[in-house]
Amino acid sequence: MKTSEVMHAWATILSGRAPSISIELTRECPLRCPGCYAYDDGHLGLPGITLRQLADYKGSALVHGVLRLVEERRPLHVSLVGGDPMVRFRELEELLPELERRGVHVQLVTSAFRRIPVQWNALSHLNIVVSVDGLQPEHDVRRKPATYERILKSIDGTKVTIHCTVTGQMMGRPGYLEDFIQFWSERKETKRIWISLFTPQMGAVGPEILTPDERKRVTEDLLRLQAMYPLLDMQKGVIEEFHHPPASPKDCIFAQTTLTVSADLKTRITPCQFGGTPDCSKCGCIASMGLAAVGHHRVLPGVTAGQLFTLSALIGKGVNKLRSLREPNEPVGYPEPEEDREVA
Ligand code: SF4
Ligand code: SF4
Image 1 (cartoon, rainbow, N blue to C red):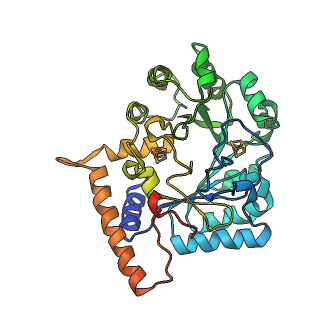
Image 2: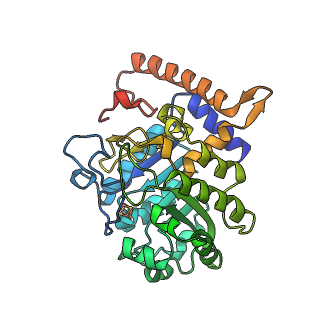
């Protein structure tokens, strides 16, 4: 991030707005991945309603709805997730250049079930993140029809970030993570590689969830591999955050600075993009760890960036309260704490 962007983000927080918005662009996805949090019963926090039942937008209504949200909230960064946002491929062809023109950084997260247009290479603020669940044999079972063969065709001629969420199943064989990083490091389409760890909901059980020992091993592996594979874009400080994830959503800078909105462009997902009641003690989200590492950085003697953020966020919330007294219809910019969950 450039200094000007850091100052802009800080000013955004002080004015009571979230510098980052994550939008579930559509309720649709052609995949049925095991462990997918987006379609969990509790994801939306609306009893009896899952993402598949939520109203969503198409065509110009979607394009204008997203642009309206961006103009209201003025974020620096927008994540387009789903469902799979590539389901709304035609709308993206219109939306992405509009967001680029507004200077907004965009992260588009997809399974790459559909071809990514090479002309999107010209969008300098766009980061396409392709989710890959391990090596081909395991991935193809979990993410059919977005198999390795399909992904390699879809990304041909483009530059993408490869993002793997490590699950318990991948930890069964020593060297698995290195084989994965080596495979994707050798692809000319790979711009960088990110690794997250599977984040369960409170009280969940299942083969995806890493044991404490597996979590320790994957962290040690990443610290070793980070020195060997330059495309593994995770600094030591970020990897070490996996040892002590934020204690709760209130302690998570990522959750506190990101407003997540679902496919109806109204329903807020809280306390973070996972929705429901995620188990922070087992969080493996790379974005959360990245911002936690920034938060632990000392900016002044005895003062960390995280402490400065907490103070700035408090000021921002005060600004929001004043604003809502003066302008009752003005939408509140900060993600609501879990106990205040609501449909916006
Ligand atoms: S591609 Fe993403 S949204 Fe679709 S089922 Fe898989 S994890 Fe869920
Ligand atoms: S992203 Fe933050 S709030 Fe969400 S599970 Fe991880 S630590 Fe908790």
